[in-house]
Length: 269
Image (cartoon, rainbow, N blue to C red; front, side, top):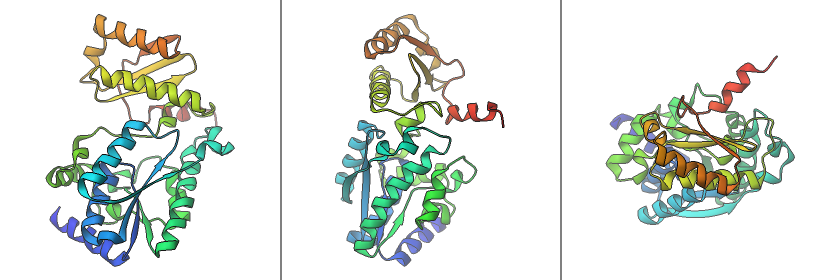
């Protein structure tokens, strides 16, 4: 890992000035940390705030930026105003990233900087339509370029003292809505409130998949037995019905990253 961290610093140094697409997640936080350490004020971490961005992630991004002295800005993005995004096609992420990189490249142009993101080596085989937008805007992925994977980034983050090192994987709230079902602000607020309920009950890895009146809850498999306890499940049902869901169910398969992609495999071609 030492060789890779040296290579990462050399890559960032060669860019001279960077705009880090900084969500506050494990990867982008580590990239922002190294960029700040390597380039100082020539590294600007930018967080995009939008209806699909969970509030607790925004708070974490701000907290880490303040704690480690990042040069940090928050901008407002408007992907929800794009009809293509609201329609929620299988490549929804493309339109989100297109919106983000439109703003970031504008900022970068004013600073003669390069936009960089937290894509890492382990992301190469995933279904990530946002990568198309990254290629179109010339976004660089330094972590991937030096072949740093997720577990290495977590370990390096731990050594650096970044609180994100053991944070669960995260994704935008729109990823909880089945493809080809409209994304609306109302749905996003329901999802965010429901997941806040689960976190307040002590669940660490959780998703609330939004199926109209039904909330399908995915819990980390090691936490699943507790979710099925009578008192806990009763509290979950009560709170989620108060949010607006009519039916509440726990998925017995537990949490799976990108589980809504499973439906794409079942669609007729």
